[in-house]
Length: 141
Image 1 (cartoon, rainbow, N blue to C red):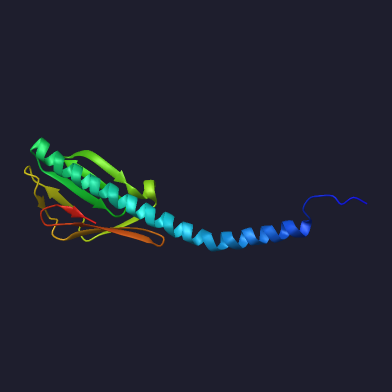
Image 2: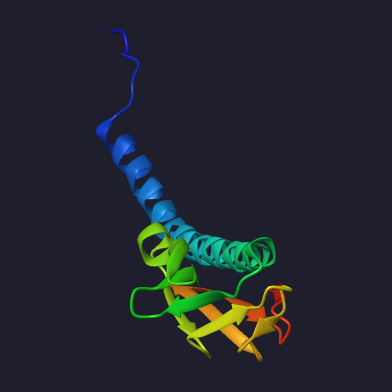
């Protein structure tokens, strides 16, 4: 009698159990990495908005404000009642924002006002990133 080649049901079940165990170990790590990446991306966009606001103040020769809207988890750049830019970070990255101040502004020379030790934190799940704004309006992570 000739023996047929192939896999048995027992072998398939063993392989599925091993794959399931590996997935159970790896999935939380992937989720944590995704949370950290989202928080880092949100802070990077926030930093870009602060840079944009400073450049807009210098270019327009006008005061430009940066508002941290923690209720909508957004950063808004305004000048003279006109919204120049908006970063809806909750929608884009799923993060929540906390800030030590709700706003700051740049004067026509690009100097920051109301930024004394402004700290913005973006959080999602296990991931959190922080942006610091100096008295002069300069940013660093």
